[in-house]
Image 1: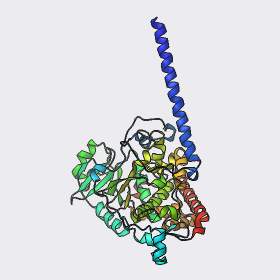
Image 2 (image 1 turned 180 degrees about the vertical axis):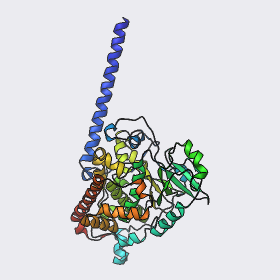
Image 3 (image 1 turned 30 degrees about the vertical axis):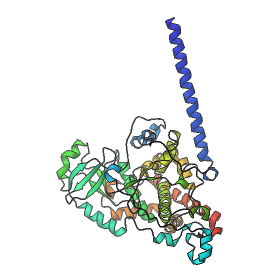
Image 4 (image 1 turned 45 degrees about the horizontal axis):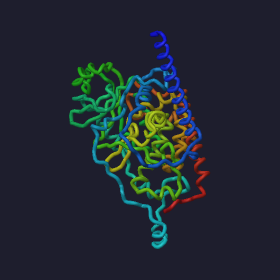
Length: 437
């Protein structure tokens, strides 16, 4: 009798597991089908959100940063949880916004005359010059240069948690200023963080905080005061780490509705863009730069990872976006870019369908960014120009290294693809000319 009961219990357990696997497989297939059809076929999703935030996805995509070989990556692994985000608790403040509304009701516009019409988009696909003028530079070239010079000579007097994973630390200099020290599980993550910063500079994107490299010499003046703490963290002597400017009073950012999974995308249409405030439009402008930068660097650890996480959390895009924060005046700050370029290129096959879907969701761009992409496409010298900028600006660049020849070719190929996408959008929407409301 016991044997019969045991067999029956085993059979029921087997059936239960089979049913769970079948349901999961069908859900995954349905989710992937939504993205392979492209953003034009997706229906607009309601803005309504509900329920407490769920963090179901990080157990998988965060763990991918720690795997040394692409052959060991498994989408279903969930054994490691690493919060790879600048500590929001340490950087919480009141978020500011530019709330002056620029959309004008059609009847009111007609009564006031053409002088009240506001141009949002020029030549069909470019954010207007008027909007660009209202967007301050997040980290200017002059500020970044001065910060880098100052940070290289500063003595570290304290290390504490506050910059993401445990191996990273919030460092305090002797003058009281703070920086994020990113040790990296392996050297390619520090490479990714660093080269993404210089790639953003090459594109004229100013949302990435200034960065310098430093070598962990325990006998140096810079690291001598914290060498025991560094040893407890198991930081290797002479390892190259990155120091990035720590920005206070940052808040989390939620993906805008046009860029969510069921949206038709961000299109340069007056009936859509005219419904946003100036502050919202300026944020969308920064999102378009972010999407181009993340596509070029193959950074899967931001919006792409949220898309991947939809298989567990249907409302993940209604929650905070990974590695993206906002200053009180509304500037977006692109933090923790270590998944880009080197590591992102190594696992590219795994994420490319998501990268393509995100890029395809945008058809309006900053003119300056598009011009930089066009120039790099025509000259086909992205590797040379990135290496020159990196080498001229960073004394430790020979110690950290640069892209392999293969990865440099991947970067140029992605430049070409972004240029083709911009050209496709221009061919589709150029007839609209200047979009006004």
